[in-house]
Image 1 (cartoon, rainbow, N blue to C red):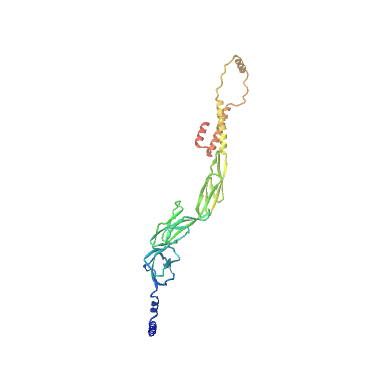
Image 2: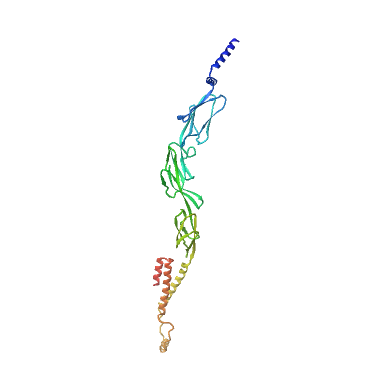
Length: 371
């Protein structure tokens, strides 16, 4: 009994003589701990106690800011010497369940990242894409920006066209109109923050339409330009088409060519009329030619010689004694008729040739036949 009392008194005196820190150490001297550190001392290290039999979850931000233009992003962790890669993301917390049956150590690895900002358009992509699915890239990565050259504001009426770009507002480069729908910048090395600016201008759609023939000039144009337009009216066989007027906008035109001023979306329509002059010419000319040729053949026909008989000789003698009857037609009538027909044919052929209804070769051939 005396021994027990002595022991209690001694323990009480020992406890009273211990400081607060010594007491805590004595309390957790047999408790497991978790030591957390960061590669390259990116963040301060720390320790936490592990209570055996209880669940402990370690939590760490995926990204944290280094300064205004850079950040760190987790890529892996090492638990008791075994390294495991982390599925990368820009935001949120990474969590890890830690066994509490013994002490452990965790070392986090992270890489610096820099942002690449894009201004002037929303229709773009990065090549390659960001490992964190945003506009931040690991230090030293070469990145290009791919952008669609056009974006429609109002379908088939108004759109924006990218005409140039700059890097960090230091230098401007024009984007050539090479017929492609997209543009890709040269690679940009991300060792610091960069900004790409794209420059755009509005364009308006010009529609040139017609019920007949093929039109020219339709397309996208900048505001304030004057665009030449036209139409090849064509035809339907022997029936030709000819432009009568333009409708739908303030068009300045002369013949089949015209110009329209672009101050917004524009639609102009070509009105076409049927031209039957070729059909008429193809009917009239053959008739005149046939009539002329037939007349000349009739005129130049060799008379048939009939053997004279005694009775005919008697009649001839009688006729010779009768006064010659008065002429009904003036002398040279046949010649004048021939000249008249030739002149009419020539006038009609010249008219059709000047109107480009018949070709030069056909005109020359018909003219020779009419000589």
